Length: 204
Ligand code: HEC
Image (cartoon, rainbow, N blue to C red; front, side):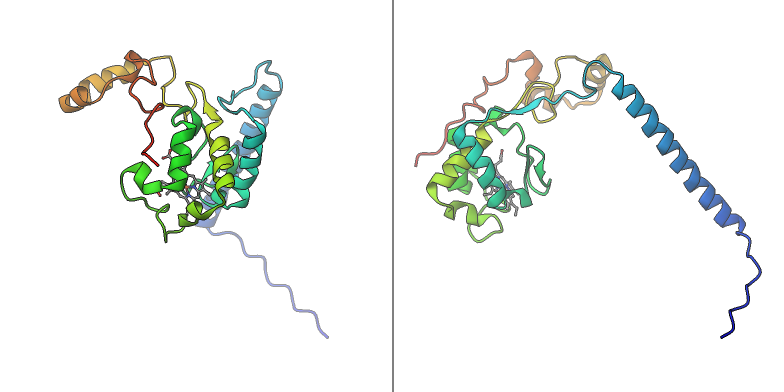
């Protein structure tokens, strides 16, 4: 058997050189950035990012968190680093909705929402939720109600306490007058007083 004769080495075309050059530069920058970030982070006394989402685990809540994964809620929802962002992220839901509301939603989604739902109506993809055993629905609801988000978390109702003069002036300049009459700046009104977290659930 004869070995294939070696072809003359082809040099890169100018376009290829630019492409590989740009790619290489990005790769080098990414590696340098990663090394710098990790070095800074490992020398910090405080954590770089504080998590403002939490879960006060009770026995029911822990059982609910297991059921939440087993019942495939994580196919659409994310909570405590499990699941996807297809549906609403449920981290911090316990700071926006109370246990009664959540449990009612799981049993009668559209009646509780007051509007048709995309996925939770009977016959839709998440329609099976209402058919889960009653005790399981309760424990899942307990789990969700224990997911809290502190002010400043992206899942919290309240914006971070700091205010930005720049953003305030932009809102003042660009927001239509109609919005200013219609919406209340929740920083000037303590949260939880507009009834949303104490929202009345529909009668059983
Ligand atoms: C196929 C995707 C899907 C699956 C599976 C699913 N959900 Fe949902 N969920 C949604 C969507 C989308 C919404 C928003 C309401 C709507 O339009 O259906 C929602 C809304 C909710 C809400 C109300 C959130 C709020 O604050 O308004 C809760 C609570 C909830 N889901 C819990 C669950 C639980 C518990 C399970 C598992 C038993 C589950 N979901 C399974 C897609 C899904």
